[in-house]
Amino acid sequence: MWIFYKHLPRGTSVKEINRVTRKGCRSGLQFSMLFKRNIIKRSKIIRIRDLKSDSTEYHAIVQVSTQVTADNIIENLDGKTVNGLFIKPHRYQRRFPSRDRRNSQLADPKLTERRKSDRRRDNLITRVLETS
Image 1: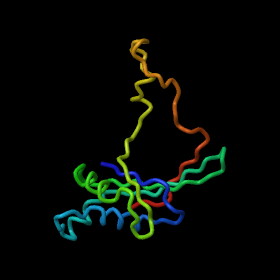
Image 2: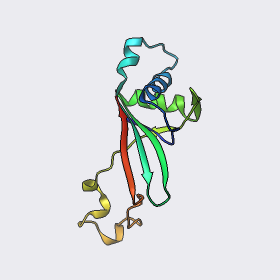
Image 3: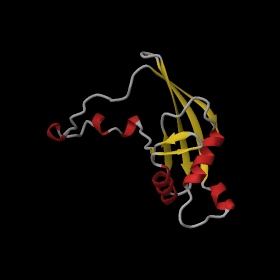
């Protein structure tokens, strides 16, 4: 399960994101430190630069071990400030062009989606800054 943290301040490190994610794992039960270290499989800090507006955004993607853990983290961190970071996490859904229903030739014209074009922004440069 992947968790997406959007609009992070510039200079946020993977260590900070991992620390915040571990804090969000806390619930009524106290987990051992060994379990807390194993909940995060991978994490990335991503910089997205829009060439049209010349703006830069920083986001983080964290892969956690189970869906229950991810739901717990999202619920505990939603709208909170942790270590000076305003956190608004949500589930991350990976999209693949090969699985896009709008490109299907077998679809009935009456049942097709209203969105005809891709809603993604053009002219974006994506770069992974840090991984763990």
